[in-house]
Image (tube, rainbow, N blue to C red; front, side, top):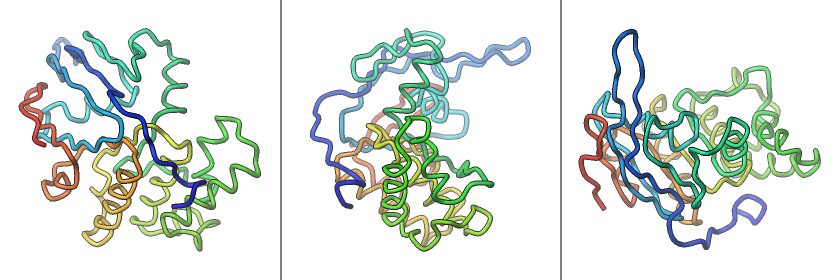
Length: 237
């Protein structure tokens, strides 16, 4: 990685702090408690895997960490900022400047090229076109898609589409990279390549939080947070 692609994060201490976080969804006449009092801290530059059976709360946890949803009760602090106090614009700004997302389903815009998909976050950050194009080119090269720069998603394999999504997630040089089953739709060889990209980013100092049900993928993480019934069952280091 060159200096335009990634810089080492030398920050130390806690970047994320959860205090007794609960999340209740109203489904018809029933309340479903997805999170039931989660308390934990995540440090700068750490690599976490969130695991647990279906319905354990791991996806809800990731959505809350990514400011895609808000707690019903409890506190979420990001870099000592109380996320609960942010309005919709504040949450959008935090996501745009501090967070990067990799989804299992890629979530690329089919009408846009690889270049344009990668550039999308920078458009909302009002980067100038020349700098934006350079950043997108660097990231496309980093994920091995320099020769597919002007292709559209339908012209790419699943693994290549996930690489585009990976590059897009890094466009804003986020403090935290959130990955939701990032290899779930990929073959074993491509999965290994995606995991190597995550490992390399972690080595460069990036904070990574990944949801996975695969134990061999979770083994790449420094810490494994096991969830059950909306609670933290235990944490393995």
